[in-house]
Amino acid sequence: MDKKSEFKPYIPADKIVPEFTVTSVLIGILLAIVFGAANAYLGLLVGMTISASIPAAVISMGIIRVILRRDSILENNLVQTIGSAGESVAAGAIFTLPALFLWAEEGKTDFPSIMTLFLVALFGGILGVCFMVPLRQALIVEEHGTLPFPEGTACAEVLLAGEEGGAKAGTVFKGLGIAAVYKFVADGLHLFPSEIGYAFKSYAGSQIGIQVLPSLAGVGYICGPKISSYMLAGGTLSWFVLMPLIALFGGDATIFPGTDPISSMAPGDLWGNYIKYIGAGAVAAGGFISLIKTFPLIIRTFKQAMASMSKKHANKDALRTERDLPMPVLLAIIVVIIIAIWLVPAFPVNPLGALIVVVFGFFFASVSSRMVGLIGSSNNPVSGMAIATLIIATLALKATGTDGTTGMVGAIAIGGIICVIAAIAGDTSQDLKTGFIVGATPKTQQIGEIIGVVVSSAAIGFVLYLLNEAWGYGTEQIPAAQATMMKMLVEGIMNADLPWPLIFTGVFIAIVVEILKVPVMPFAVGMYLPFSLSAGIMAGGIVRYIVERIKGTEQEKKERADRGVLFTSGLIAGEGIMGIVLAVLAVLELDGAITLPFSLPQIGSLVIFILLLFYLYRLCMKKEK
Image (cartoon, rainbow, N blue to C red; front, top):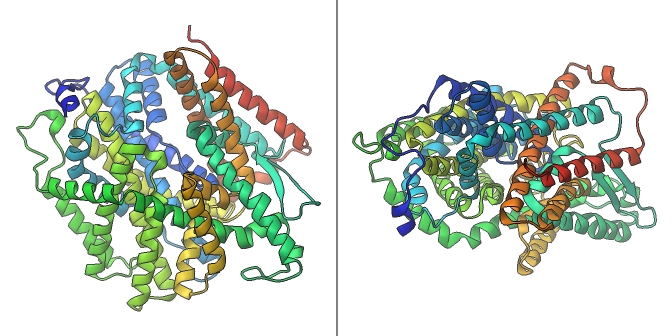
């Protein structure tokens, strides 16, 4: 604890500087909506989201410092706190709630109301913030120097280098603009196809391809070559081993859950009918393996959290940097949400069931906060926690007589709350770590998180409806991988009709992968997603690999990597925003009006994508003047 006792925040506790201002709140709200919508689109497309804290921080510095000519690091910190909440709410919502739309499309139930979607996100988000308050002292303060909190620390470094805010914000905006134009030309004007592929006739069942989208290159660069290669390995196993084997041995047979002879199926049909279930089994097993491996850590964190509940966190005599939201207020909010869960028809639970949902939520908030402190938000097993919750909730609802579509919808709604709790708790802990380093007021940040949650929860329902209306979930444009998998698990358990041989094939593949000491989750997600997605992500990972291998000082290497992260964050946000714009055009049936009468061949798509990757490389290697 020596590191903690020696630590002094950048802004001293006895110094008062602008923090909670109209400017910081309005910019934060705008970024929460923008990054929430962009990450919703990205997550439904590729099955993962990115942290919005750093791009939100640099955009804030670009606006507040360069345009408004003001200089307050705590204002910028509050902007990224509010803005990043949108990304986390989106991450929690998209992994579960699209399942409700899929059932509605099948005619099994009505479409969810905007109010239901809002309440699921709102309850989960506010609980995630409230649960993190008693954990702050234990995880952020007491273990400073022990838990690294990678994204939170990196964001603090960006804020501390505030004099570079204009240049860094320009890098983000450059990526945003390039990706928006690229996406519009590819999928709006249809000048060139955004996916290219080739099916091998002599190797039936296999197909190679790549989606040449800026967001995929961005995800690959940010995740790095290792994670990207694990995803590609999973896709290779599915598309070049399992699918050809199914085609070879299946022949003219019709095998459940498929309804047509295997010999008549294209590679995409084999993936949709069989590989999805194998991938779902692998992802579910990966989630449980992640939880089992961290079980001792989970118990220790939970004990710390329970001990922290008895401490006072809002002492008026405490230093500014030690003040939290008062415990009585937190308990009142939690009690109100428990009652609301009991009373809202979307959650078919009694008062005890509502209490259990909240207890589960606090447990997983503790896990999530500790996990992101150790390994970062990108590796936080939120989907694994959601899977565990869904299975338990489905079995419990079925056992108590709440079965059929009512039970399935209830399980997804409950799982959605838990998923958002885990995502927001992880995001809040990273933001509070940033605030701890720069000298922010925890209470102010916690209020900012709640503002971000409320705004993004109000927006997420409209975004989900827009994307479903434009393309539909489970389609090539919006695969909604995690939500489709959650849907399959819930209805399979409720109706006792899961293709268990395929599920267990995925489970045991995941176990073998774990034994070989390969990270299970990225490998399993790669198995589940189309190969073309993993190939596009790998392209960005290769650029990161090349950039990291070129000689230079440690400072030079760090500056290269940081420029790339900011630019690719802009790429992801830009494509996400343009994806929302194209969805609006599709809903208004205006998308066909802007299509060009000609398009480039597949080789043109590949050349343009390679040029984008080369530009990313040159930008990373550019020397600062």
